[in-house]
Length: 184
Image (cartoon, rainbow, N blue to C red; front, side, top):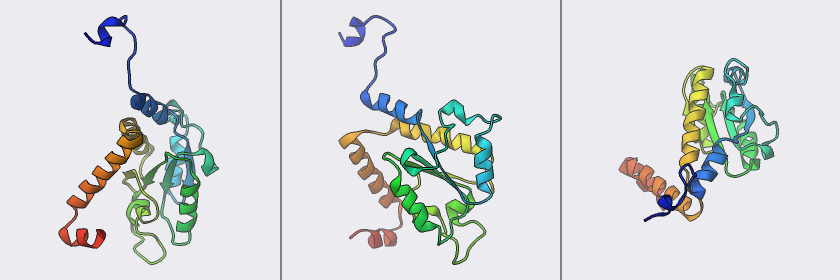
């Protein structure tokens, strides 16, 4: 006979990890980091038509110390990359990143020396959003998928173990030549 049978019906049971995940996903504050045309679509997501406020994200923070989600919208130049890294480093932990648009994700049509060929060379990315430029509906969809990811994240030692397992899985998926280059 478990605790569920002894408690009155309707009593809510959960774990600390689930409660923390729920609180984190419902209190994301994005940092404003619009760099190109994708920024217009990101701004449109905050308007009343798409209503980003229903997710508790109506406050785009101009200061990185009050933000925990960075939406990199647009191409990242080589000169902007150190600034992007500095803003990311100043954000509070835990923090997440959405790479919005093909230019931020892979350099897009700008295959030259001046544009970083993927923001993941500068900061770790949690969610990639394709498109040129992606529509506000696509950004909302990626935010919902990020919410699911945040909800499932582990805490404490369990998180460290999950990160190690994910890194092992990532290395297993690479070709053998790449594995030899990455392992010490």
